Length: 349
Image 1 (cartoon, rainbow, N blue to C red):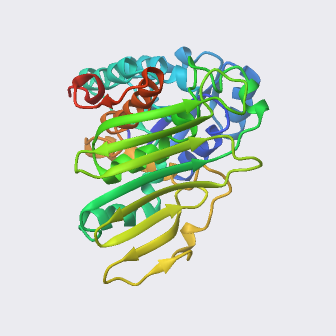
Image 2: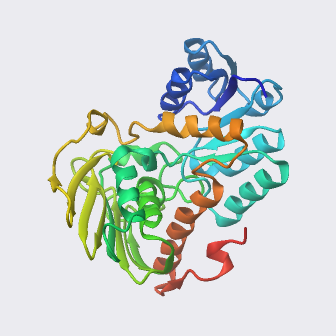
């Protein structure tokens, strides 16, 4: 492995500029190849980043000088593209959700393990300063026993959003829970711990689409706490809230903002109270829901390769939020409580 880590990018949609710019800003990274089925789009990106363009990502995978492939395609393509890249000997960074089926997520994890490459899933909000502070507060026990946890995503998408051929479809995307809410669901279980049961209702209320635009779930956590998830794309005329809130014996905290980057409530026993204040410059709301922290994810992947360790947001970590959303879908479909205490949901790793 050369000192400089060389990247190939697959997919030139909305999130691709965040990846490309992050690689450009990192000292030990270089973007050398870009693939997209729309060749003109790949060529435009490639020219901008002094890279080579490909219309077929599999041709890009033949290059021996690519160390990491970052996948920014529609969600339903993530699994096979990631497996193809890993089988070509590449480390992989893949956008959320890592897959739309647990079998596919498990295949991705197993492929990385068997070949000996790294698999990283983009859960960038875990790296936001307020989220790191909140995780530290939980780890240090400053909230005491956790009692209640909530993830809330009240966002808006116009009908045109779902008319691009893949958004809102079961094969390529899922709905408001799998697409828009999964970062907040990931954050909730990352902070509160494992979930033992899920009960959910979903509905398609304001759009013409296959999947849901509204979902509400009740969770039981292994530590005895309970929680709720509310996710939707119906809050006309704009995104209103995306937040994670934790309530414990000794404190109540809520992180919100555009991308889980702002401390909204911060009341902890024996600590200075902060409410609706920006404690650092890097907590200022970013211009989009993608937030500021993609560069931190990619930097961690580079360090994981250099230090021969697992990325902090590896496949096993990312599988948990996919399993939770799929359990919500199963509960909504059957009208029954779904228990998360078997291998189907937890996996065997």
